[in-house]
Image (tube, rainbow, N blue to C red; front, side, top):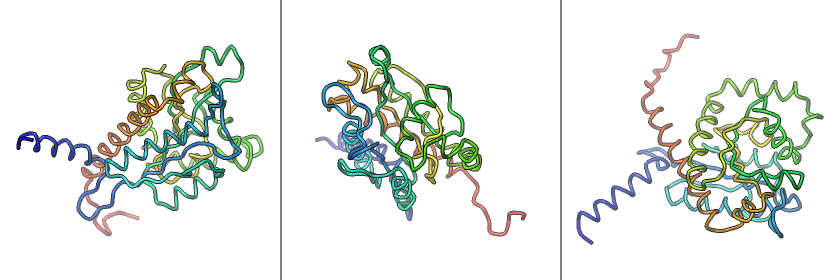
Length: 269
């Protein structure tokens, strides 16, 4: 290998590592990946024996490998086919002091006609009100494993919790993270673009960092469901999500570095 080739490889490696590795005295970005469902909670069903819980876990492992290769400190809320409650997932994320949270799911439709025609990727961030009825239906399905149903919890209580979240920078950054990931998902997979959405997901509501939920496709669709079970397609999904994460982290670090340092006692009460 020539010296110019070695220099080029070194430069490329540095570019890949900048977003998630830290500067002097700083730790790497800490990322929690949440494979949806698990154990007796199988999630949505796909062609043959394909289940959402398996697809989500496989993609999560692939995503972790990519983010770790880029220097990230990555945790999974479940490493295997095990039942982990939504509350435990939230607590685990906060206990790790995560900088980012990404929940992986696969979507589905209830009727044969809708299953045959509905496909595509969606990326969600938290909101007290959903983007529409379809987004609310997705949230209700994913929230079915929550300690209480949406009806039992009460919309007013949820709104009270989320009103406080709306004022936090983590919530604003959740939107930025969703918009960093989603177009890359569409470009890599060429899946139907069902947009960035917002909805009241329980698993996102208690996380103390930027958080998104990615519906990687409709496992109930006869063609897209088969794709979701393929290793090569899962790699495309993992690659797209990791690229979005790295772009988000790079932009966030650039933003934070540009902020003026606060001097103790300079703020007025």
